[in-house]
Image (cartoon, rainbow, N blue to C red; front, side):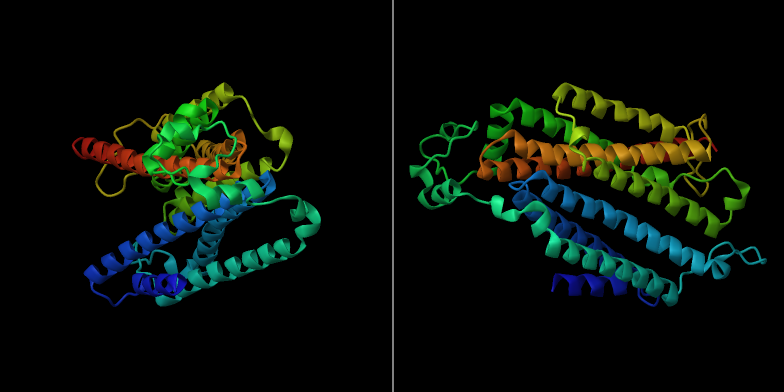
Length: 371
């Protein structure tokens, strides 16, 4: 049902003969529905998989990275096929409204790639029993089942002391505030990973995708609308490829970093990507000028910076989300730590997006007054 509603709103959003108000409302509903459903499904799947060995958590993370590349590849194929129709005509017009065939082809390629991705996933699940031997693993062991059934009369051994909740609280339940308080106060390692994850996700949403989308090529051949759009999507694809590669790196156990201070330092070093974007080929479009000097105006710098930014994002985010639940022993608390980490991820994504919007508004205002 959720997929059906998603498709309906998608078709409304790409329609050309609708009032502007309906288009805006349908687009907002589409974004809201996609966000809620993705967070709900990802949180639940990740929380359950956190009780299993690391390869299972890596699988869902790798699938997320693959999905990012799928949309970019579909968009690039669409642009290339319809490139002759999108070229600027000699009359001086530089824009053409997208046709229904453009939208249909984009959704067709996206659906096709998603189909093959799903097919690969089912093939993987069919033969995964001989690889991971799931009989040796249990999502919830016998002690956890006993804990669920008996509630306050049973307390599993774990670094998190349930006595901190007070005698009036049921040990089988935990509020959001109590969850954050227990996790942050009882386990300094998990708390450090939470802050590292918060910093990395904040940096990612602060720069991506808004600043790569405003980056224009210095090559004159990319000044046309079609080629310019192709360059922008290509830069976004580089980030997703880097993000996917960063997740792949963690398939090797030797690539895991277990020192909390080193992880925190690496997370802070990602702020070096900010000036590489702000002083690069940023174009606000229209009559607005970029008030910042283009000290690093080079396509190669933009592409290399975006690729490395994606690698660090995929590697660190996946590392934090996989490593944090393994800092506790009990499966129930692994699920709680997973939720705690994802809560910080969502919070950092929201704050990073807001900070990016505020910075863009400030630069637009300053650039507009200095034309």
